[in-house]
Image 1 (tube, rainbow, N blue to C red):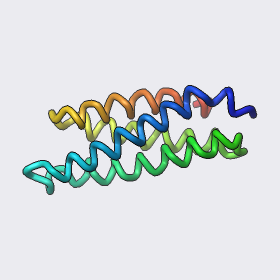
Image 2 (cartoon, one colour):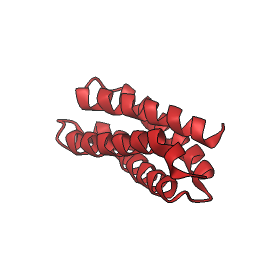
Image 3 (cartoon, rainbow, N blue to C red):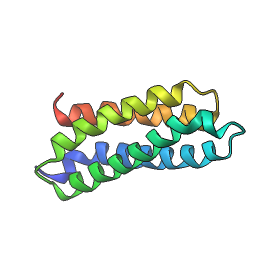
Image 4 (cartoon, helix red, strand yellow):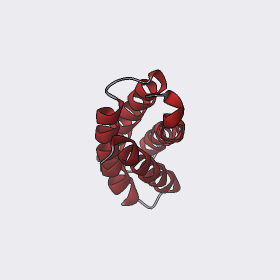
Length: 110
């Protein structure tokens, strides 16, 4: 597989990872941090998986489709959790996660 075919998905994964990092950092500054614990944990997991998926796709790795499938699932979980919170950083993160999930689903063939 040529990594050029992955360009849109790589971009979505990188944008999602950045949005998740920003969201997690902003959540730590919220008044009720305990209420944001699941959001923060999913942000961290999602960012890591998005970066892994982007790296594997950039290398044209053999497991790219499987990793993208897992990435889509975690992005959907993160989008659902972030979408529950009214803070703008959570809403921005949810949007980035939904876009990444869609791109990864297409890439994985699911």
